[in-house]
Image (tube, rainbow, N blue to C red; front, top):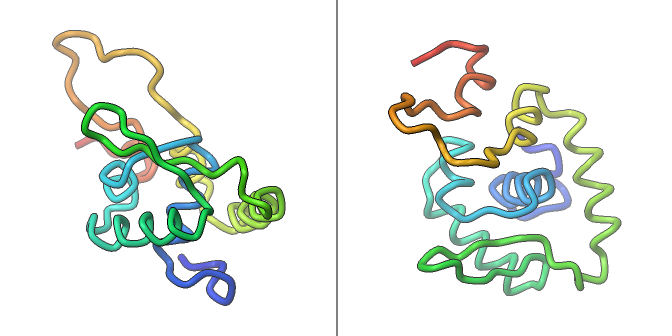
Length: 125
């Protein structure tokens, strides 16, 4: 779904910005995994957005973590635009983006991504 087609260069930019707005931060592989898209276009768009000053990154160990740039001059209008675009997205995707794991997984608990169950309508793998 590409809601902001006339405003942004690519659909992957919209996905990245929406992910960063709702999750606060993320890295390329997690964004690509969430949307089930290849990592390469996500990484390219992350680099472009960072070059343009829309997002900033910092290393956490070996992982480059991205977030919206708080010093970007048009941050508030961008957030308003993304929030308006988010209303058009299916509620399953938005709810999955809002659910964040805050503590480690219990030892022995089967690995099942939290967003898989909400995106696929509760179907378990």
